[in-house]
Amino acid sequence: MIRKYISIFRTIIILSVISAFMIRCGEDFSDDIPTSFTNVTDELAAGWASYQSGNYSEAEGHFITVAERDAEVAEAYNGLGWSYMRSKELSNAASQFSFVLSLAKLQGNTAIQADAYAGMFLMNYIKQASGKLSGDLSEAQAEEILITGLQYADSTLKFNPAYSSDHDPDFDDVALKKLMAYSYYSMHRFHEALDFIDENVLSSILVDTVTEEIHVQSDDDKNVFGTLPSGGAIKILEVKDKSVLNWPNQGDTCWNDYTPSAEVEYFEYYLQGHNQVIFPSIDEKIYPQRTDTLTSFELASIYKDAGTMLPTPRTGVFQVYSVYYVDDPAKTELRYWIYEPGNLVPTFFKWNFVKLHKDYNFITSGKKFVLTYSYRNYEVKYQRTDDFLELIKLLETYF
Image (cartoon, rainbow, N blue to C red):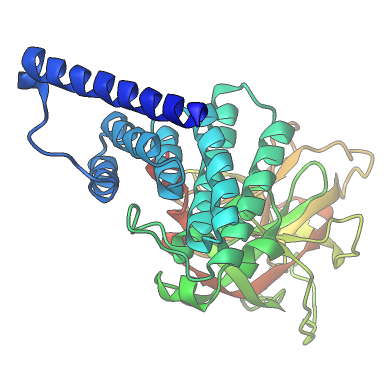
């Protein structure tokens, strides 16, 4: 009984103190009493409104107010995560996203989980891109961060395959897949990149299907590649061997008789950048090879790239193994390059001439040289889009 009275007495005292405090506040601070009191819903709306207007500091204030009033509102921490990310406070963003994921999981809120995972993907994308640009991260470190981010993106689509948000309406499942595709593409994981170029993504961009002729080239490491004229390639549909003689015999003794093969040959290949098809290297595949005796001629000086040329009867010359002077076979150290025509050249000059450097006085018109070379050119059908090239601008959007 005594304890009961003590408890009642204590409650009365506490209420009296609170009442006195409120009366005192009313006397001394009446001017500071807000005329209206925003509820949690209004504060959340104000936070996202500030976020969308780019005032991320103000948005953070609204979301913090919500969290202080009700610690179980997952959207408040999600808003903080996105606001911190936009302010480039990536450590704070990571902490908020981690917390909101735990809270949303307990509450069974899959929409908030999807949105938080999308934020974590962008956060990692920004982190690796910034690290590479600043030099703070090696390629390997940046790639590791990006791979982690892609796992977050996968989780976004797992929780919400048709992901979208009101706070960033332009960043929906289509934009997410585009950025995922570009991320895999940047790591040369091309098949995985194409996995995200689905019908929804393709329908959001203008895609052309073009068929163009390309001529194989090679570098010093024996990598073989062809450059797609229009670029912007997202998928190769067909590759045909087109290594055929493309103009008639002109009566010059350097033109050997040759019957082109009618075969159509397909290669395994992959895209590099947005405009190259990579073929098997010279070490991995035996490419057609010829040895021809060719008569040199001088390209007139009126053209930009004048000089002594060796015309080959096959287009698509990409590798020269040897060249020597017929009248003196010991002269095998001749210097040359595979001719790449400039702007001011005859129209028939295209990927089938070898230009000799004038190291010797006999390198003039009308001389005979023996040339051993490989050749190949192809007709490639592929899908292309300028929009895909613009994916990099998504980085600028979230930078």
